[in-house]
Image 1 (cartoon, rainbow, N blue to C red):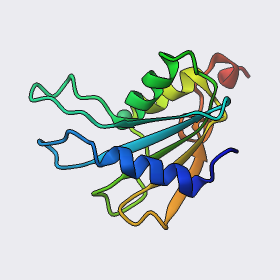
Image 2: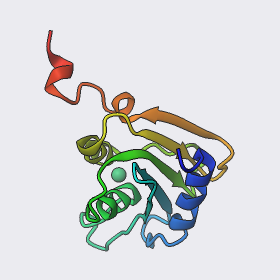
Image 3: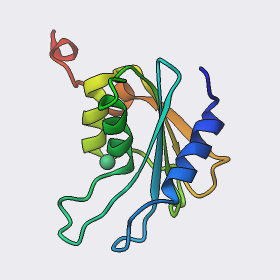
Length: 134
Ligand SMILES: [Zn+2]
């Protein structure tokens, strides 16, 4: 990988500082590494109407895909105001699985020295028909 997990976490923290989260006060940043070696970042963006709110991970994924970079190698997500390594929500797991089954998801919280990793297949099992064949 062009970047270490810790470097991706640092990118995610930087992105999370741009979070627009006046309602939850819960800042999240994401940094996505594509096969070409580019990093796309995102932050959560809330809305007073709630449902238009979008997670940091999806902002990063959509930025990458909209730049024709859908071969996702890794995605770091950091909850800047979270006391534990923050996992992606179900919607973001679904969106990530659209583009990669093997991407490494790196999860961290306020203390970025403690992080967990998992593949999207770990986080979203039985996602495809192939998984369900008997
Ligand atoms: Zn999400």
